[in-house]
Length: 232
Image 1: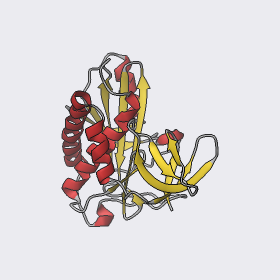
Image 2: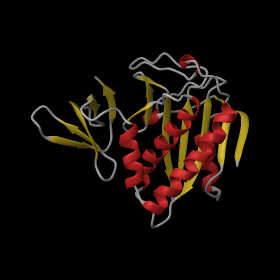
Image 3: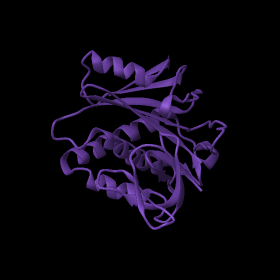
Image 4: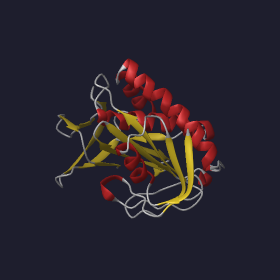
């Protein structure tokens, strides 16, 4: 079920509160507008009317793959949903961005409370911001018109299917789809790590647990579990 509100501070914050109150898995909350939207690492997320802003809830089970790998599930489902409206598709960039011709189309934020993981997704459907560190785009800028309610239905169905595969088949099918929809092996990347260091290298796939593998100039491989990644 998708519940829609005209305005809220953050769909993730609302869904976290519902999770703590005992909400079950599978529901979605979508807002036409957010007044306190947020992205990864506490960044503000601009939320004008017309774009998609939504959150859903996953209740972790003891047999599930590691919770952080839901980021891969999310972006694989999101790429599939975008492809319905943009047949040329978008490119996945680690860990969970979608790019169109190198410009950012969407963002994903996962937050956890106990056994609940809230998956928040923002997609530029009609508007896109001017970002200080990277280009951005929207489906409208790519010549595709889609309303947020319609997009929500397609995304919810795609996410449910990939969540089910993640749960029943493990991470590997998700990882394979992620690599197939990502920028090619050998793409030049810069990874900025939480400790402030930075590494330049070539994309060398994902590890079995979904970490980024970066091949450095000396031929060594650096495995990255957290950080910001930019195309060079």
